[in-house]
Amino acid sequence: MLPDFRVRQRDFLLEISRAMTAQLDLGEVLRLVLKASVVMLAGQVGLVALRDADGQYAFRATLGVDTGQLPDLDVRLDELVNNSSYGYDREFLTTKLNQMAVSIDRSLRQSLFLPLVIREEPVGLLIVFRSYGIPATDNDLQILQSFADQAAIAVHNAQLYARIDQERKRLAATLENSADGVMILDRQLRILGFNRALARMAGWSVQEAIGRSQAEVITWQRLERGDLAQAIAEGWPFRTAEDEPADTLYVEGDLLRRDGMTLSVAITYAPLLSPEGTLENIIANVRDITNFRRAQEMQNVFISTVSHELKTPVAIIKGYAGTLRREDASWDPQVVRDSLTVIEEEADRLTGLIENLLAASKLRAERMRLDVGDVQMDKLAEAVVERFSTQTSTHDFELQFPPDFPVIQGDEVRLRQVLDNLVSNAIKYSPDGGRVTVGGEVDDRMVTIFVRDQGIGIPEDEQDKVFDRFYRVDGPISKKTKGTGLGLYLVRAIVEAHGGTIRVKSKTRSGSTFYFTLPL
Image 1 (cartoon, helix red, strand yellow):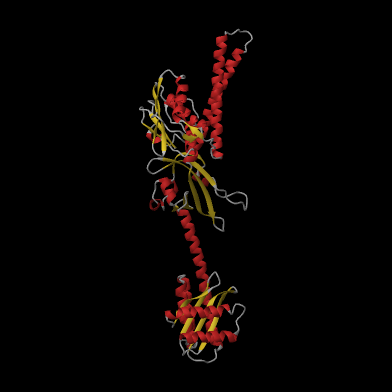
Image 2 (cartoon, rainbow, N blue to C red):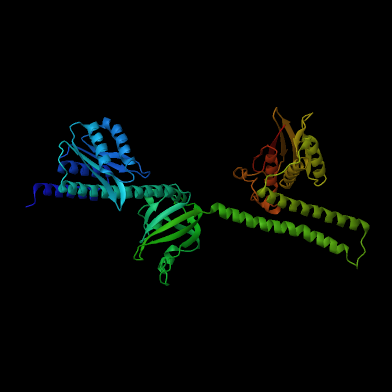
């Protein structure tokens, strides 16, 4: 039969091993190691110190020590470790441990000390004090070594677990707070993970989506590119060539939300294979591409509109020039003058369009530069109105400026461009004629200029968008009216470059009023 202490040692080691297997609570394992060490060595006090990532040591488990004694013990531990960094001198070690023992309890006579090491890396210290001073036997050291080894393994496992747990939490937080939707599928395409961004996109709550088939949650009103189910049926994600990695799968279309609305999304499916090469999971990254598609559509419309806008004056200029240069005809001087007037007007129109395009392009690259001087906005508005009044016979114009309207500091050429655009729009979007009013107001800080028409108006849900680049209000009159969607974009840029703001107040079929402010 094994001696009693051998049986107890074996039982302690089994208990510690079970604790390490059952849980990764470092504190609980260290307490078991310390208790076993003190009992088996007939000690009264036990201490376990651990080394952190910065190489500093601190006590993490104690037995037989008052909490009030720990600050003094930490200081002594620091002295012990720092002076032993180049090797342990037995005499120095004995002296420091005796001082530590006396500071705990003067009845303590002997200390047993063993570093906790794993893979030749120090992770901590195990110290046992006892009240009798006989030489430590080989059996004492063997027992202490057994428990020190267990403690070192426990520390190593717990640290690994802590790092893995921290990475898991970091990854979970990243996925949960990602602006893109993230979905994790099992090999049967059931949903295992579903973040909040995807819940907002699909209209399903996270709790409702988990456990359902992907096809039940991700349903398509229109699938433009790729199909997960079809790709899997055709052998995705496995490749025929040996050792080649599996490709990601890209799917794009209009997602049918649970509430019946649609959303344009792009999904990239990435396979997660086991070491044996079998499919374990599929990770899906879901991105809302609605704005991208809208921008692409606006760009296509813009290119089409600009092409048409450029072709029209060029065709007119070419037609009139070709007519005038015909050698088989003799033209009346008035016809020639009228034709040249048309050519000049269309050339001016073409120049204005090109200047708008260049200005918009320049605005994307750099801040607008102003040539600042004195500007009389009432006089500037009067000149703009006089010029436009000759171009229409169905509109009446009115100026509403108070007397002695103040002079402001601004770029006169740019501010004329603002009024030109606003008055031109007032005419274009009042096809039945009516009154166009240009006026101004002043307070102690700002002047406010307004342009009011009696035209078709702007729907309320589109009023914030009319200042966007390339944006044009959708409607039958808009389709017939020439324009690139750059005029109001440039107007806003010019006003803001002057430190002002612009807004619109409008009601469908009741006209629009554009207000812009400029600092005095």
